[in-house]
Structure formats: C-alpha cells, structure tokens
Image (cartoon, rainbow, N blue to C red; front, side):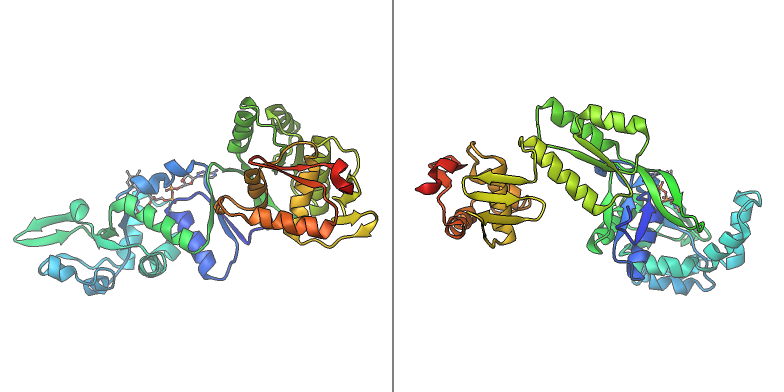
Length: 365
Ligand SMILES: Cc1cc2nc3c(=O)[nH]c(=O)nc-3n(C[C@H](O)[C@H](O)[C@H](O)COP(=O)(O)OP(=O)(O)OC[C@H]3O[C@@H](n4cnc5c(N)ncnc54)[C@H](O)[C@@H]3O)c2cc1C
C-alpha cells in the first residue's frame, strides 16, 4: 500500500471525514479500506440517528447550519437553550463516569461547532432540525434537548450517503471487502502502513478456476505467511509476490508467467522473420528493427503469444482497452493495417467473420 499518501481504515463517519480532510489538506492519493462489501457499506453510521452534538453559546449561531429554520418552525430559537463547552464536557464526563480522555475530549468539545460547520461546507452534509429525536412541544413552543438540535438530513442513511458522494467526487479511492489486520510501524516508530486481508481476491480466484477460466494470475499481497501462500496457490494462483516488492521483479515474473502460459522458454518469441523480445520490447523483422507505437506493440505481442489460433476482434479490443471502450469500433482493423505495413511481411491473416491468425508460412507471400 505504499502508493498512497494517506490510508484510512473503516468507511464510517469518522474515517470518511478524515479522508476528506486529508484530501482537502493536499494529500493526493487517499484510500479508505473498508472490510464490508460495497452493498453493506456505511458501518454504524448508516443506522445512526445522524444527530450532531456540538457546543454553542448563542442559539442563533445555529442559523448557519439551518438557514431557513424560522420559516418552518415559528420562534425556533425560543426553544433552544445554549449548550456551552462546559455543558458538553460535563456530559462526556457523566456518561463515561469520568473515563473520557482529558486531552481528546477537550479537543473534541472545543472544535465541535467548527467541525459540524466544516461537515456542511466541505463534506456536503445537508442538515435539518432533529425534530423526531429531541423536540417536545411545551406551551406552544418547541423545546429542544440540550446539544441535540441538528442532525444530518435523512439521519444516518443521509449522513453516510453524503460522505460517500463527497469522497467519490474528491477522487478518494474506497476499497471494499478489505480488512486491516495490522498497523505497520517503521524503525523510527512511525506508522507507515497497514496489513490488509483481502479475502475477496482468493474467493474470486477460486470461482474463476471452478469456471475453468485459465487466465494466468499472480497474487500481489502483504500476506506473507507460508499458509497464506499455500492458500493462494491452492486457489489457483500461478505466482505469489509479497510486499514490499521491486517493480522490476514483478515485471519479470509477469513476463515469465506469460512465457510459461504460451509455451515459450525465453523472452524472445518468433514468427517467421518477425522476432519480438518481451524483455526489451524490441521487434525485428529479418534482423532489422521496427518501430511500433505502444498499441501496435501490444497488439503484435498478443497475437504472437497466441500463434496458430484465431484471435477475435473482441478479444483484442479487451486486451488493448478498458471495459467501457466502444466495442463496435473498427480501430483494431486500422491498427492491424498499420502493423502489416510496418512489418512489411504478411504474417497476419484475416479469417473472415472470426478474427485474425498469425501464420508464419505466409511470410513470403
Ligand atoms: C442505532 C444507533 C444510533 C446512533 N445514533 C447516533 C446519533 O444520532 N449521533 C451520533 O453522534 N452517534 C450515533 N450513534 C453512534 C454512531 O454509530 C457513531 O457516532 C458514528 O456512526 C460512528 O462512526 P464511526 O466512523 O466511528 O464508526 P462506524 O460507522 O461504525 O464505522 C466503522 C467502519 O469501520 C469498518 N471497520 C471496522 N474494522 C475494520 C478493519 N479492521 N478493516 C477495515 N474496516 C473496518 C466497519 O465495517 C465500519 O464500516 C448511533 C449508533 C447506533 C448503533
């Protein structure tokens, strides 16, 4: 996980606020790790009342959070009592029988109102009076429980939904189905990462193998116990790399795996006069170097790794582009045309209606 500036554990109210704050303060790559799957996201926050307790001296200060409240509730402020920092701190001490951390609780209380204002402004949390939870009518005036006047619109569900929307808008990555199992501490005593358990990867792999999907798989993980490796290989992995790893080593392992999967013993693949070196990325025809764009190279490499079998246009499109690429496009045909021209030898055969076939015997044609 060393590709991130900030790693936050758990996608509840606290963690999503931390992630948004990190992003706001300049962190570029922020990730939130959540052990629940996406469809069960939100933690306790989802089920909560979404009430936001904070300290204020003058009830009219709340107007910043509920701008048109007097239109809906006549004489709203008459029923709201001030809730001072001392009141808030006293309540914390009372409900915890004095066990509240003195430093943290002071910080919490002192910053409580500013935090709630920040949640509205930066976090995009819409707010409303917590009427069903804390208001009672007394002598025709709504009286609100002390400190419990404002809540997120649509309670915990709305609070959670708004946090996720803001996090996604800010480009914060959220990894579901990933549980933090250990905090990693460097020699200098600083926290520098977390170990995660990503059960999903292994179960996805198990399912693929059950469906007879033979795609080569390397497991890349922080789980470095021998029993984890055994579990990974038994699930159908072809290789297992533990973090931290060197990128060069990983790329070499990818090349080796592709070689094995296609029955080649070295990094060089040949088809007639065309030779492609997967290590250096060089292509030569009859010993003369040919300059290809990255797309042309990947296309040729894919075809050469599948010499002797028909490769469909859809398969090539899938290999070259990400999922949302327009599959009706005839770009592949254009690339094939360019490739034929650059190679100068006719080894790529079009099989009408089916795709393309690399055929060394046609190289002299
Ligand atoms: C019914 C109910 C009503 C409540 N009403 C209020 C209220 O009105 N106002 C209020 O302030 N508070 C309320 N609370 C308390 C409320 O839950 C918290 O204030 C708030 O939601 C806590 O947010 P959180 O982010 O700390 O925790 P959570 O929302 O519980 O989020 C923690 C997240 O971390 C994930 N996680 C845990 N361990 C790991 C791990 N090892 N790796 C990866 N992910 C992990 C969990 O799956 C979860 O998504 C209520 C609680 C309940 C149960």
